[in-house]
Length: 96
Image (tube, rainbow, N blue to C red; front, top):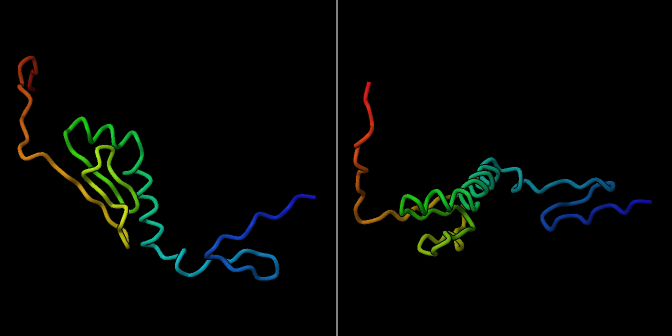
C-alpha cells in the first residue's frame, strides 16, 4: 500500500482529493513562480554578473546581495545596474 502525499498547507482535501486554494490558482502567483525560477537561478545570476548587473525576483536575492527581493509581498523583479556602462571596442568586427 502506498501512502498518500501529505496535503499542502494552502490546500484542502475533499473526499481524499487535494484541492488547491484559490490563491494558488491566481495567474499572478503562477507568473511570479515562473519569473522567480528564471531570474533567481544560478545561470541567470552568472549572466547578470558578467554585465556587472544584479537581478532578483520575488523571494530571492542576487549572488552579490545588492538586489534583494526576499521581503517582497507580490510578483516583481529588481535590478541593480552599474553607474556607467561601457561599450566594447569594435576592432576585429566586420560589418555587412
